[in-house]
Image (tube, rainbow, N blue to C red):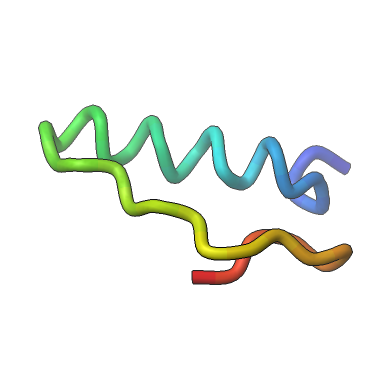
Length: 37
């Protein structure tokens, strides 16, 4: 399932922020569960 993949999740976040012409938030840490902010 793509939505369980942290890299895919980050790709979606980047795409949404890019589409809104907003700066992409920096990632503080990555865990086994996914990306934390």
